[in-house]
Length: 282
View 1 (cartoon, one colour):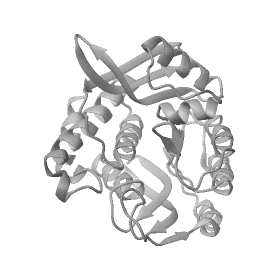
View 2 (spheres, one colour):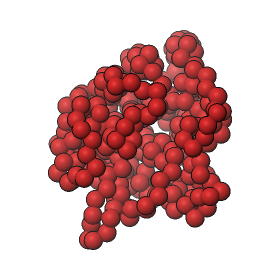
View 3 (cartoon, rainbow, N blue to C red):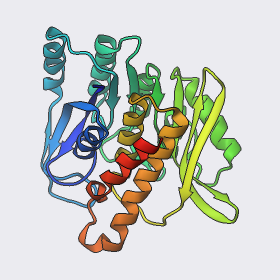
């Protein structure tokens, strides 16, 4: 049985980070170990007055215990990290558990829509770049990509720009880069998806679905969890992108008609049978 260790925060209510990563990876037939970086009463998007407890001091202790019982992982998957200190801890985790056949998968969750999330300073993207430089696969959105590269955010871009951006991301040191939330037009239709670049082969691949003009918290975490799970199951990047995009879109489609009653994330649970079908078909 394949095994992923994922490191990110957990919200007691709401659908993002560990709250979606654990069930999605598990539903894909992959064992999922977790390292919570913080615990919150709710996620931060759309809520106020939430509680927050930093668990940084527990991370090295968890790592040491895992090392003492000789745990091994097929992938190490990091999501939202709340501090530069936690990024250094992830580099240590990669060094400790990252065998030659262990996939080091980084979702540099720190920004969107042209700006950093609240609580992150201007130096944080440079620190996240350090972690991405030792990863096998990184999965930034357009904002995160440009911040790590020290470039201005661009909302009006061509596919040539996307491809050049991916090459520059791989020049940081990672083996493959996946740019998420890419919007383009195909045959007169607005499309939304992801584009990947493999620095070793020099090849690109992509997958797009029809754009839904609606956004929900946590969809990036849904996408990354499905993508990482598919890669660990041995799917190609091309097939993994298809699985992750199709599943994420299906989650949004199942949720937006009921948005008023469900504004805190997507109904990913209802769509898990479709995810399992996608895995079987691909």
